[in-house]
Image (cartoon, rainbow, N blue to C red; front, side):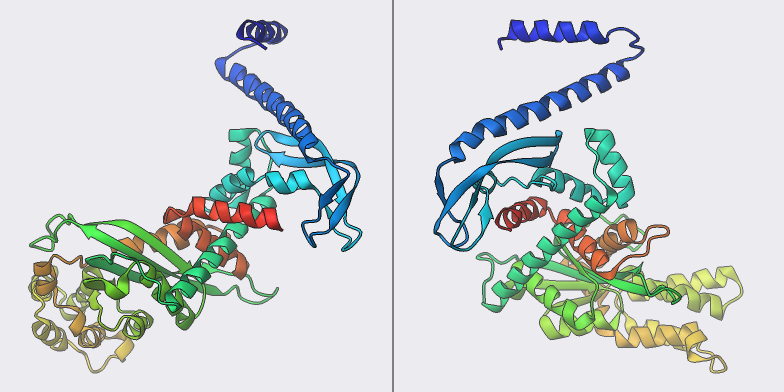
Length: 439
């Protein structure tokens, strides 16, 4: 059809619909629905025409390699971005192995009675951003295609499983000694955890599980000269990883993802984190030569409770806090520990004594708090990057109001979201499409 003929067809269509039009929005909705219906017919006819290239009396069996015989033409249904599309294609049956196969489906990667690869990619992308029911509603609003929340859950989990496979390949590569050709000069790593509520048998308390999250990144900018000055250091080239598992198993992911980023051969490898013991045990095990830094802001959090315990007067509290924080900023841990120890209250249980908790924390981590030296080297001393990662992966997506997660589903969604945030979505899409085609 030429352009003039197409315009004439459009005019005739408009004349049939122009009665009762009240707004541009109504016009847009009607055009979208018409284009979707037209596209479904177009795609169905196109597939039917292509089917003639996949007909012959016999066809090589994709299972055993023997010749399969033509049985009949059979209708298939696809669930695409244009909605439900029906088409016909030839089916062959192998007398040797009994396998029934469809050459056109196999050649074009068609997925009868299932979401197309494009629909799966987009609904899974929504699934890593919002609850599945909301994703279902939004997808239909945007595309006029209805996909159930269960289907979105399934698609998102499929992408999480694909992320697991990529992680296993990454682990295999690390164990075989594969590394980047050009290691980074300075690489940062961080780990932390957020909590998600998972399902338990009926009548039992719903358990909280930790979503362990990690990030590898580089940073630009310089640290401030005073703690209250503007912090200009910004992370970039960030890759994320996540899992719900014991720390020992998470260590494999920490190590293999680090090797993939060149952590073993980086000129400077810097790990920034809070005081959680499992983090530093993994660092000591997998990257013992790394520079270890306790996040400055976590280190400061122990001071205010000591000030409040030691002084009733707020002016005295602030004065003590400023003096002690300045000593911490300069890496003078002896002064900091002494200042806290002076206010230990022996009549309080250790867990209730803020000063004793601070003394223990600073003594255990003193080798990770040489902040004056770190700033001189231009190191990032804040863990905002990993805190943002935990917020984006665990809090914003998994820790939603009323959510009770199946453990495997929560794990898959966390991994899929981490991959999305790491700009790996197209890699996962190609993998999911490939696996579907050979299934």
